[in-house]
Length: 459
Image (cartoon, rainbow, N blue to C red):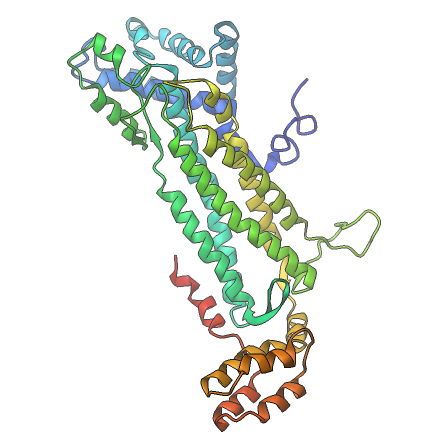
């Protein structure tokens, strides 16, 4: 069966494939093979450049360029050639080694040195480096830019609605008013904090042999500074060297990335549900799209499907990410193979993140505040001013202020006139009484507007 968007097992490779091209090229089987080739070439070139490793002389400029070209121009067709070799080897990394030797063997100048491909390496030396490079690229090239777009859109909306009063709801009940901009700024602030945490994760790797002790390396060349060479190769690839490992890099780094993404997704899940709720309340209007249908039977429907899709895919992403964080750092003794099959789904987790974040971005583009509805709800919630009234009463020693306001307001609404009658009979200074009488639910927003505008300072 030829794989198409219609018969793909995963929706990431089917229905949503067009949205995830960048991650697909990085995290696919072909992407993993391409990164393995890059690691093997980097190790071979490092050995050739090492003066204390005379068995492999310095590469000629044209040979070095040839190796670089193998990496830069590695294609899906070449990945398929590696997979064809794997049918015989039944070992994916060994297939890469054999394919690379085939390519290098076509050059007479490299033929004597083919056995220095994968020299003293265990497969995990190549795999952990490849996955580290994939994770770093996925974060830098795909995921973080998407978070940046979300940050930009949410901040712009927060600034645009900084002064727009909105009724709060705690426990689902009317509560002290805020502004729409302040509530959006809360999301921006939370998202930035978690995004910083993600960027602080050190993408680490190792290349130190079968159990992490350079056993084979030192058996061959006991005087060479293998840890130093290992560190130079890893740092040359833009990664952080991990000197203490078993056969596998312990994957604590992947757990840190996974946990950081889980927290980012949790913030966005919280927002997606709130945005959905505000659409339901009518606080957000949804923009109509010509030709779009909201229901197969109810013509009036305009559904908040982007926030719903975002919520659903955030759940899928976090289910995978939480499994990675719990499973991958655990390996029996010096190595078991359970991590290998699990790591192959890293791209799926990244894909569900990207899919969800993109859905939320589309949702943001399709909503606008309904100022009439917001004002109407505020004007029907004069009970929220019981809080400032009883607080001023406390300030001036009026006995049982909370209890008096509770009797006036709890469990039933009050209107402007009944609240004003209560305020006018209070034994408090005239200036404070007048200030309370001038207050409305829409004006009782504390410093919400200032806080919304100040979000630009908290980068």
